[in-house]
Image (tube, rainbow, N blue to C red):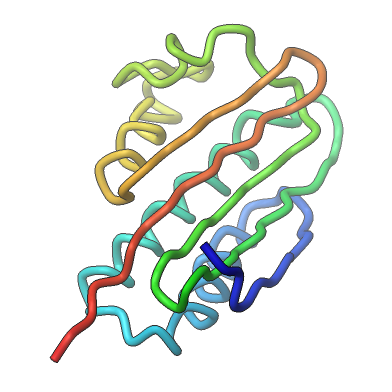
Length: 144
């Protein structure tokens, strides 16, 4: 696949920046003419990924979320959300529905499940003490 456009955004992992990341990624993808459903899927997945950074990555210090969006062949979008936070040892456990490191009143534990449902592919890599990288892909259909 040929890279046709890309952007990288670094933002503090604080409440409120999730909305900015979601809107920025959606705006960046609009030249591909995604359907309303496709753009809502992308916005939801980005929201979940950045919210995970804000809620879990930096419990005892401040940090950043890096959001990178790449467009390939003018139809495939890859979104990568990276942090340098606490990470986690068991990715498979973290991806299970309802798993959360917070109380059930604070978070539902459905972030990765939602990302997986709305995107074509989801890859999660994490290492304790080094952070987490979430990579999501979605192919935009050609609409008449």
